[in-house]
Length: 97
Ligand SMILES: [Zn+2]
Image 1: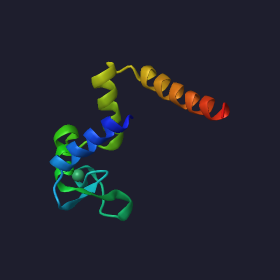
Image 2: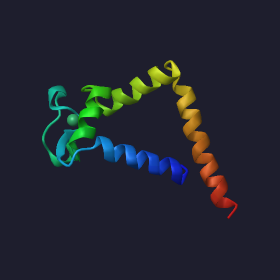
Image 3: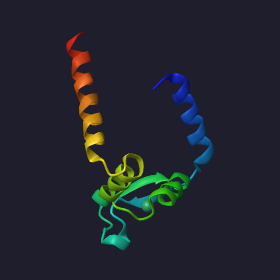
Image 4: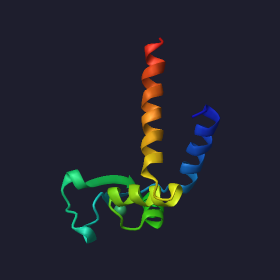
């Protein structure tokens, strides 16, 4: 990501974020998640709210499924090929150094 884009993103996140943190359950308690440390992360309160506005109470696996459906019409192959290509180019560029 270019520095310019990163600065824009940082500025945006600063504007939307609040000063308080809140606890997020990776697997929501309403979906059987517990309060153990492996299932709980600290997240900025405002970003936490935005996260749930976007993804409701989906589990991480359901979020991936949702994104694949939403952006690629359920074509998982597209996502896997994209990720594989990214991996390949990462190793290709490090091999040439
Ligand atoms: Zn949460």
